[in-house]
Image (cartoon, rainbow, N blue to C red; front, side):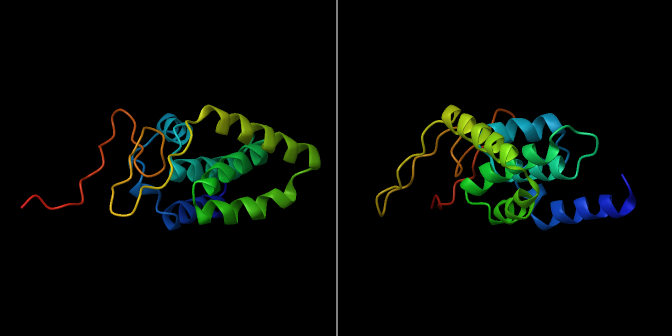
Amino acid sequence: MNLRRIAAVIALVAATGFFGSVPARADLGTIRREAEHGNAQAQLHLGILYEFGYHLADHNVKAVVWYTLAAERGSKDAARRRNLLVTRLSASEKKTVAREVAAFDARMPPALPPAAPGRAAAKTKGSQNGAHSAGSAPPVPTHSTR
């Protein structure tokens, strides 16, 4: 990987707030596990790793899959990356992306409906707003205990 490419990947990772949602020393296995559990930031960063990876078969297809999944969960950065990269894909590659995204979505638990006003939203494993896997810190309460 040349220095210019490395600098671009580092800049993308830093600009998207990677270290805010996945441990700073996360390895590829940790990032993949978080992504597979619905963590949009991990999905975005797995897409970045695929997009800029060398010598990887169908790396652009995999990048678009992860960007699409993250975009479905509200990541605007992932939506921008996906929209740029999808123009490089053939029609058959786009069909592959659609199949892989549909297969992933079928494995994920259904999203919870929005909470009624004045009530806290329920959080489940795999949900975008409260997901954490074993080994990561649970969400921090935001209310005061006076």
